[in-house]
Length: 374
Image (cartoon, rainbow, N blue to C red; front, side):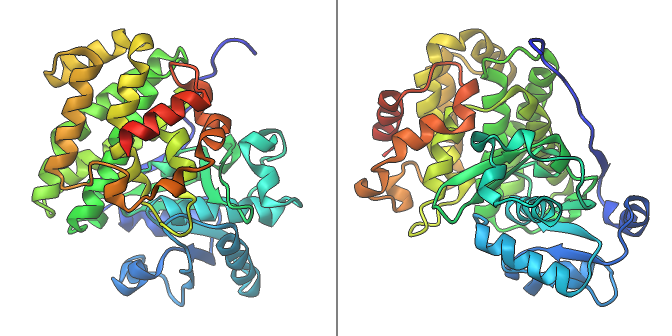
């Protein structure tokens, strides 16, 4: 098919207090004994108890960048307790891990063979266990996304993409983000903003997704600093949850070079680099790199945000925004060493996000952006 297909198929309960709808949602999707996929800090903070489930089965061994080994370990627990569905509770990592577990539960294949660049789109069928996503950060938007990012045993961080792994239902309750620490608020928020920008300027023609991305960017731009400075501001938290969700709804239009570089960097096991922080560092430099092919959309963004100066003006504004959020300004400030960058270029070129970047992504171009961001 040559023409673009536009579909938004996820059901979402959205708003402060929406978590109260969980029992009804579980009944509707057919889950009575879920495996709750989360991380240990959320368990310690009492988020599992907030679900109100009796004798919950919990798998909390999910890293900030989920690994194939944690996905396999979660499956063992699912089968051990005879679960009948998943609840992904947390940021993007637990929800992405739950998606990957669901695939392996019903598909007899290696996890790496489900990745987009390995031809996985054609292999993943609709034979999937039910999944409910409950995000506790405003960043990835994976609760409405068709993707899952997993660091494979091979060491590559690969995207699994399929409409069949979109959660059956999502509960997006801004109250779950109240009091989120400033760093996580900033880093996940910049992830949401990067999604909105990259989808807006991607080379794919999809005015519907572009409009959603631009609206999400405006909401995020106006509210992220408020949420950062006032962690219990429910209005700002609500707008950030919507911004994150809109960024992911716009994935239909594709992402770009920010993500194709941040994915292999995020797979560096000796660094454990936060995805949203990487996006924040890379965004200004990628905007400058892409300027020749995204001027019209950048003008729309600048007009909407009250900025000027083309891609350079937007890049500078992003750097200043990141500085106000007290995020690192460079890869070296994140702890990246020169030797960590060896071999990143071909991995970035091969990444699925490079396909929709406004400018063709080459190893030379990636090297240029890495040098500027370092």
